[in-house]
Length: 160
Figure: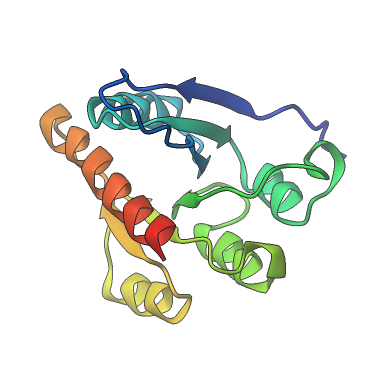
């Protein structure tokens, strides 16, 4: 049995420019590449977005979170879920299907990111109701644009 470890949580509060207090967006990231999460954090900070990022490294951890098992029994509901399509052991598709079965996650937008993009993947993702497919770019400048994409998805879902 795999030993559960607590999720890595990164919190960022943007500089105060307005008197309006906006709650931090809780973003769940299911990604086995720490470098991509580091770059994602930088991309989100560049958007001057207040966020709390919960990083899960494996599909097994993600399933425990989704099923509210073990250390994740009382985990807060995220405002957005970002899933890597190419995880080891469990695929991103497995995780997406589990998310769609979890009633407590109804209405939470799910974005998928991957370094590859196939027509089959696009069809399956559309069927699973993915809000956005994000292609992981090779360059740093393009990676920074991911922050804006995620900010836009969050703005749309939090306004609804």
